[in-house]
Image 1 (tube, rainbow, N blue to C red):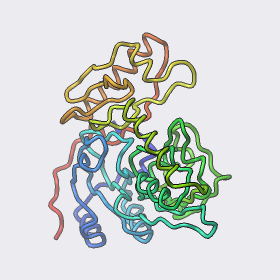
Image 2 (image 1 turned 90 degrees about the horizontal axis):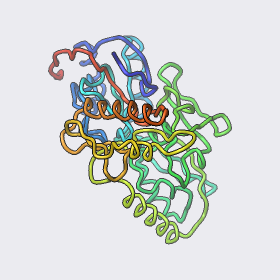
Image 3 (image 1 turned 180 degrees about the vertical axis):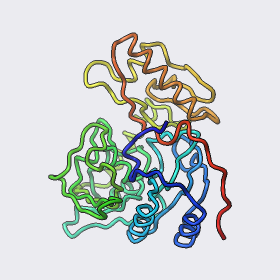
Length: 331
């Protein structure tokens, strides 16, 4: 049983043969890792192995990989830095892509308030860049981890705003149709939804910012970070909010708290005592521990309040797949 998600950029049933491994190794060199545990690369520090973890260096790499995957019917999954992902213990079959080592360019455009940046740029890095350029508009992202590609994919944001508010252009790579450029008027963004991006990979985007005093922006960023630290458990790995807030009534965190579930543990995982909508990896937690707590929360909240909570964290991988025996990296 596999968990379906639009993080699967390309569906497929092909398997990772020695021939495919050799082709990947020849093309990507040190930028491909085989049978690589994903836990070190993800915010949760949880996740089984990928058949092949690839860090593409350019758009040409994506085109080459698209042709290979089409020929061999290989599935492709995008992970970024995994700030909103839970990869199951059995791992992910096929190709896993991360832009975290490339697509890092940040460029101020001619109007001096618009910035074009790659999908692999860290949110915090762009925020710091904007402060240095005396530009405002990204303060809402203060303290929010991960890459911009993932932020656009999930329309990441806080009560102070979201990326959809400042986005003017988006360049996507689709594993069927290739590159395409979309403008804000062509895009729909919902609350923590993947509607605008679908199954595509975020290559780059343009944000429209506004002139400001860098010192003023810095003060606001520091205030927001302090506010987050006071309310959220940041000392242990997590994926942030586990559930979306219901459209009406109490927030997910309040519902979980009133259900008496704060501090509930399973293996190395714990429902945070500080913020009940956070499930923490307190040390060597497995994905199955997190999934067990998710199940407990959903069942208990529904029974007590007749509210069906919806996960914000995205679950990836094959729950019951039998892991093939590793094949040594080709030389």
